Amino acid sequence: MTNNVLDNIKSVISEPLEQVHLLYSDRLHSDVALLQEVNDYVFLHKGKELRSILVLLSSGVATSAGESITDATIKCAAAMEMLHNASLMHDDVVDEACERRGNPSVRQRWNNKLAVLCGDYYLAQVMHLLQEIDDKQTFDIVNRTVVEMSEGEVLQQQYIAAGQLDHNTYYEILRRKTASLMTACCELGNPLMRLFGEHYGMAFQLWDDINDYDEDTSLPKPTIEELRTEKQKHIAAAIDQLAPLPPSKYKDAITNLVEILNS
Image (cartoon, rainbow, N blue to C red):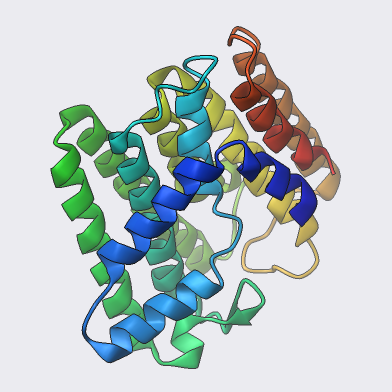
């Protein structure tokens, strides 16, 4: 994803995204110096912020002027970014990964114990935000997602241990580990965006796997041609889900987010 295109997409939600940044930093702040050092490091290398973007844009498309972006939306966006970063810290321990987003992973820069504990701290702050939102549907969506992400990671470990992996299981691992979180982000923004989120999440992870095809050997993959075909199927389905939405800058921005994956 080019920074220029992503910056243009972020400009549509610049004000609420800044609110997400402030809330995220405020809730993770700790007077434990080492924990705050990790927080600052993770935020400095925060990546694309796709989960927050998906929550905000999915909420924005509900009306042409984006009035549906509320305080609860901001809290959901911050919570999903926290959940994502917690999962990355934990995943890097499981995978013994030395690098994350082009920089040393938390476990590599410090150690495995600290990475696990910091990930747990992030998850606790997610729970605090959900408690403040105080909405059963929101809680159920996030709970379902954490279950699916955990199942996806265990499923991957199961097939790594077995030394074999059929294509259907490969796609199921992608759906649970990655697409489930993006599905939740879209659904939290607007329940009508759930199917869009499912297809976007799958297309995104397939796009990522295609780009890392020769470098990531943690799982046996289908052929790159099959991955490209599968990706295009999900891109087309995601675009179809956007078609009924009223014209708006939010719809244009989320459409551009999908079209990036054609690169």
